[in-house]
Image (spheres, rainbow, N blue to C red):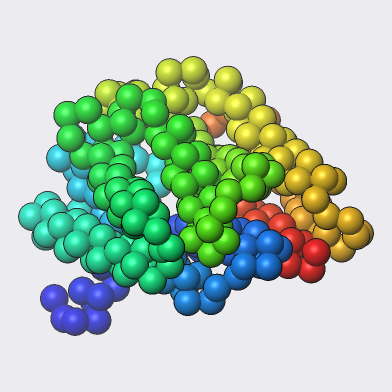
Length: 302
């Protein structure tokens, strides 16, 4: 294997398309800090680096855990993973998970040391960093992997929404404003929607493999209704924040994403064949990113 092909394989395994969505929570948290007059560029950049490392760690660990449990089979609707066709071994992927765990912790520690104002901040955010690493790994790894217990949606909401958005805001503003829970909720729900499309697509394979995602538990029909609800509540969260905290027409630019989200929701609601959702996963990730960027721009303009 030459260096170029090796890089390509690992780059693909890192799932670069997931990275912009992961960064969206940092963008929103920093935009909120700017809105509060407390924006710090270095904190934002360090948060970007830490988030990228955690997301790649999560992607590697997800592939490794599914490989160990035998969940990824030839019936997989999504694209084949490198470990499935032997381009990467389980041992290599395990080593990559360990390396990224170390790098993620070091990056998070640097972020915390730079931004903290009290010993309590230092302890809390170092602990949150360690918990985030454990959460990234144990989605599919371990005997009680929470992704196999139907808890993936909850963890995505917590870490991509509340922990990331509020954490980045706090490291810059050093306070927590109750109203920022609304955009944190919206950001988290859009991330859950991306996971939900993935689980809707893989429902039959997951069921056979014993991967009891929320969709496997509630069924495809309820899962499609759940998807619509995620998008509606996310937009309402942003709208309520704008109505209560912002005061100009340009603070509602994020509403430009509404027709696109509505069209997407209607497609998901009407199509029952999991194979038809394969191209929709990338679409949902793109829509979540666009919505979050428009909302962040709305905050900054405010």
